[in-house]
Length: 176
Image (cartoon, rainbow, N blue to C red; front, side, top):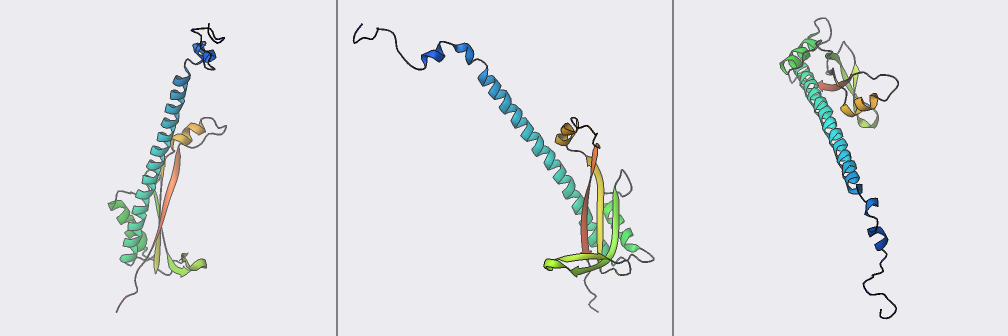
């Protein structure tokens, strides 16, 4: 013994924890499991959101093309209702068959006016076909995350949700 300290004995604040290794067992495994679970949940939400985004984008493309074709071919909503026929033909050519599997395609004729904040607004008027509005809708499976949440709700949620896309196209005034 020199200077009042026993030889071979180190006094450290960490010695108390080292003496009881059973306290720390499994902590890293639990943290890894929680981190893996959180990463899996985030991946699920990202993939699910991406799926719904792509469905909406595809539907918007179909509505845009149908509105452009109906307006470009000068469709009308009066007696012959050619605008609806042109829009339906266009949507069918692009893989969207209306009135099957809950899919709908609604066509309205009207005009474009400038509303508040200088935004163009579609005004429905079946006697005029200066602008044509096409609304496409179809049901898609509910998101996986929302389905999991629905398991814990008292009232059951539907298995599908309906997404829709709206497009307005106006034909240019005749040059001659």
